[in-house]
Image (cartoon, rainbow, N blue to C red; front, side, top):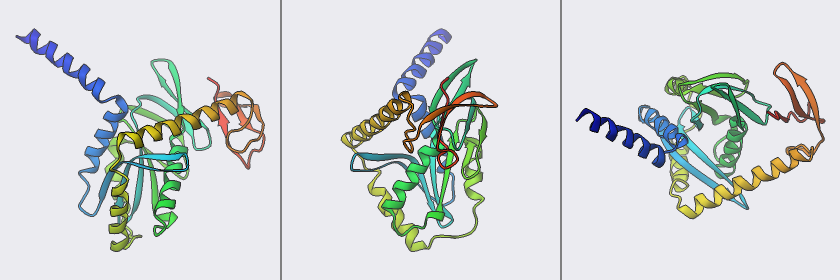
Length: 244
């Protein structure tokens, strides 16, 4: 009987991994944290805003009188290295390194999309947050962004105490953003295609030695973590690319 139960548990875990990939599981866990916020906070999940071949998929937005929290969720574990300026961050797990797109830059794009969609909300009312799993160890250099583990998310949001948005703006913002949570498969497919096209264009630019951000020349530089490619227009353009 115990063997049968063990087999059933293993099968269930495998099925859950298939149905809910690690990124989706991370979003569900963040959603469960956001549900514990007081009533004056309204959390919305999976918002897709798009137009003219560009789209932005936002994992979570929390609307409150104290600001609008734009949350990018990452389901990574291991050691996470990166900075605000770098194009890619690095995950080091069991001695192997993997690169992923800088989530701060990703979240800045989300805020830009929200600014165009919500003209009544001032720019300084947005609070971008990158939220990693609890088993990620963060070695990141940030100045204008919040990068935290999930266990600190609720406390981080609730530390903002000064109202910056009126009740009317909060209410109208929730109504407007709710429209973008009702997405169908075609909308999600279009967003994925847009993201893939942009990633391909960026990779091709880097391969040809061209900065994908400003069009400048990429040159080899050396830092405390080894060699990397940097834009020749630095400091005006702070694009970097780690070739590992």
